[in-house]
Image 1 (cartoon, rainbow, N blue to C red):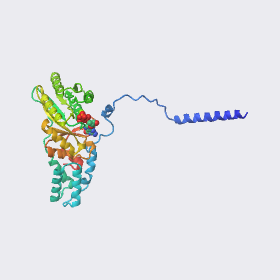
Image 2: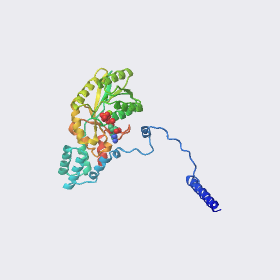
Image 3: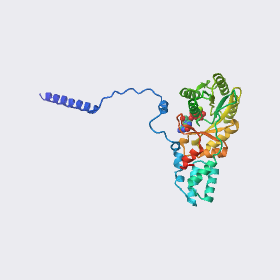
Image 4: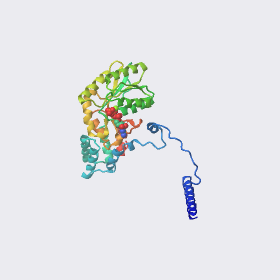
Amino acid sequence: MWWWIVLALVVVVALVLVVRRRRRRTPVGAAVVARAPMPDVLVEQIEETPSLVEEPTFAQRLGASRSLFERVRTLGVRTELGAEQLNVVEEVLLRSDVGVLTTDAIVKGLRESGAPNGVAQAVREELLSSLDRPRDVRLDADEGRVPVWLFVGVNGVGKTTSIGKLAFQQVQAGRRVLLAAGDTFRAAAADQLAQWAERTGADLVRADEGADPGSVVHDALGRAEARGVDLVLADTAGRRVNSSNLIDELAKIRRVADRGPGQVVETFMVLDATTGQNALSQAREFLAAAQVSGIILTKLDGTARGGIVVAIERELGIPVKFVGVGERAMDLVVFDPDLFVDSLLGTSG
Ligand SMILES: Nc1nc2c(ncn2[C@@H]2O[C@H](COP(=O)(O)OP(=O)(O)OP(=O)(O)O)[C@@H](O)[C@H]2O)c(=O)[nH]1
Ligand SMILES: [Mg+2]
């Protein structure tokens, strides 16, 4: 008899538990919506889709560099500056990698004349006077020749990514673009460029790993001429067994790119802003061989050392033409000194 009672109790408890679990799963009043399977969309494609969230401004992209200049922005208007304020300016400029020459000039100017229009304004004028080079980007070659942009720089600085971003922008502007995979050092380099070609609608010429980069560029020019391409973007390897080989090879690629139908109208040296002053010594190694016409400074979004733009121009005498402020296709912009300096200092012209 007693086990009948136990069995009945167990059944009742089980029923109560089942009912409670069901209630928890389906809240009263909530519609049960079937979940659609997630579409198999590339992350990059999602990122390129215009979003309802507002795009960060250039100043916001400068993140860490901008934060560093906060202390200068708050120094205000002073006709005389004490040692403490001058120290702040000096420390911020040196930490941002503006370089000793420019820092000394700014601090000397402030010590002599104070800052009747504000410290930030005085720093602005001095920084802009170090950034007053012409920086037009050449797109046209001589009659009947195909313009080539050549990209050089050590490995990992952002050459291939910058080529992809520029291809995106040039295709958007209505030009027929061809990418030449001149980095034959590893197969992945050509694969990376092929992905950009696919995403941007640019044409691509590539060869097997270990092939002669000169012949890739040669083939690319032949195809560009035959197809009426408006611009060839040529990637190069960032490494070789030793650096003198690399420099020799770059000189050779340049010679190939600049004869026959091709004309090198820009040679961009790509530098990584996060390496600060090291970027300068790297740059010097390339300068002689590659006849650099402009710098592309990448990864400004990931460093407090944005002041390196100033040191590069002042010490190398080569204009920064584009800056990278992120990893998406639109995150490479023409370098605008006023916008850059005003973004750091909160000033305006
Ligand atoms: N945050 C940020 N990342 C960048 C920027 N430019 C490039 N990168 C990243 O830097 C890394 C290296 O870029 P690559 O374009 O492969 O560099 P590379 O110079 O071609 O390198 P090698 O082919 O090895 O010589 C990648 O993860 C890029 O997404 C930039 O402006 N901002
Ligand atoms: Mg590369």
